[in-house]
Image 1 (cartoon, rainbow, N blue to C red):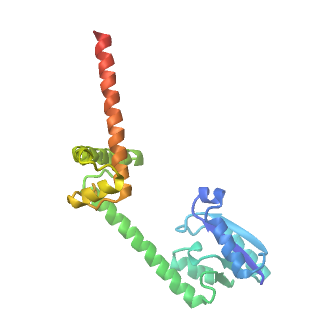
Image 2: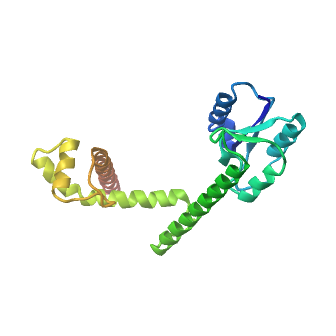
Image 3: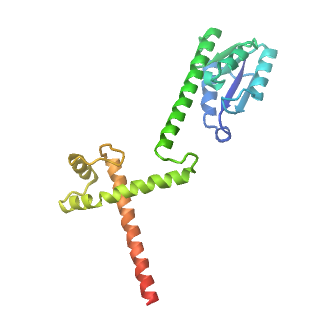
Amino acid sequence: MRYIAYYRVSTAKQGASGLGLEAQQAAVLAHCACAPLAEFTEVESGKRDDRPQLAAALALAKKERATLVIAKLDRLARDVHFIAGLLKAKVEIVACDLPAANKFTLHIMSAVAEQEAEAISARTKAALAAAKARGVKLGTHASVINAQARAGADAYASSLSATIEELRVQGIYSVRDICSALNARGIRTSRGAQWHPTSVKRLMDRLADHDIASLAHRLRTFHSTNLSG
């Protein structure tokens, strides 16, 4: 089989690391069972249509009367009009995940992919609107959002400190036993879910960190008072 291989990754980081790229190369080689005449790799977002590497791959495929082979249809685009333009280039295109697909199938699949992309965009906008309604400042730096989340989790953990101490007095120490005891009392996690060993372990770690921080604060206060005196 005479073919030109085309690969696309969405970020420069993926292109440099081979993340995603190696999987595409393996899929193409497994499908074709022979080396390509040439390989073209694009580092670009699927939402953009100006892809010089794809244009070069199509031009060479047309010149060599070879097939353009891609690992997955979504490596081309989620734009039905863009797919239609590619098909007009009169170059045979094969997607390894749809080896039996014809031009009509490619049109349908690209339309479905485009609809999926639009649905994802709509869900993202709805989630952002809901976050804004809750008072979240959109555009806030990720580190600030993470800090706010940690502060909330720490505050909730502190509210359970007395309960954990009570369980310890009763001889309940292990993570699994504490997990069972909290669920038996109807106490939920900060997200309203039942406790699991992993979430209990995180709770215990937060309480331990809080105890260490509290002790450090008391020591600083003690030294400061004595030095000033």
